[in-house]
Length: 476
Image (cartoon, rainbow, N blue to C red; front, side):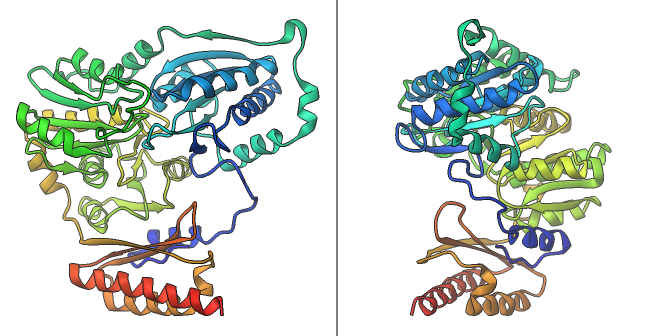
């Protein structure tokens, strides 16, 4: 549930968050299956069943070629082997790509004409966790209803009777050139008339899936590359490096006098950027920079950027300044992509650094996004700090959270509902309020934006207190 106060697009997304789920899912969350490796649900047994179900669905079309990539976690070997066994048990052909970014799996699934793509990764989580994400033959993440069908098949005992036997059993093979194919594709998204000659770039691959391909992309385009986080050992993914820990790259950028720092997460589908002064440039600012230029060049299809309810109000105002609009969605890059596809939009993303350029990629891609930003820097001949400062004026924002005894619809919490309405009137269109439940626990998340830091902090705290009172009243 969300409540917001900043225009029709935001209000539409608020209503969208209140829609009840049409089915109960035990395994798949907002971004696939995820959890501690070798504990339910991230066990070899579950991975085997995923492989069986995915291959079974693909075989309905006559064949089942399943492409599998992973990040650098120790448990990746275990999950990869189990999943591949499931695919082979249902007569499928497995293409094992080894450690490659999530967007590489999306690209290779389409370019190699696979029937599905599977990513074994827990993204920005610590190495103890792992996850499974599924892509369709079109390179897009499977929609909720298709994930639900996969989950239903995994629980269907009759599926065991459909296993392949004899010469119908499938096989697995390694795709040795997977990384090289992806590097070539990423470079093709950079304008043909530009090069990175003379530009010093610091790249932090988080000891993750992009540890080989990320430095290669920038070096082959001519940049002088300083590489961090490129020595994975199975246990150090995301540890004190990458998008979650930009302090590491901030210092190196300043020491090396680099033009930009690019910090990826463990599966390289998002990035955090650091300017030449060592200051962090988040996803909202990058979206403002790219979207305004795309609008000016007539490349922002539909005259709109798609972002989530978490993006700063300053981004919305920056777009209005060039005649564009902001379309908001629920939190999650998959919902951004779904809105882009249904609305015919070109560009979207999240404040956290998931950036989707649909003319180039079907999912968030940290390397593609970094190249689009570098193209702006080169064309305008200005440092990133200067561009970022002018991109948007950030509205002060505060985030608070409160764990309650149980989840209840916001409209069934009278004190909280009245407080939201009162504070929205107080902000009088100069800010936003967003109240929503966590997707995984009975925790209420409160975001408030407005012109005054002290006031929005007060509002956020009072909303949390109102929620506590509602929770206590319902339990007596």
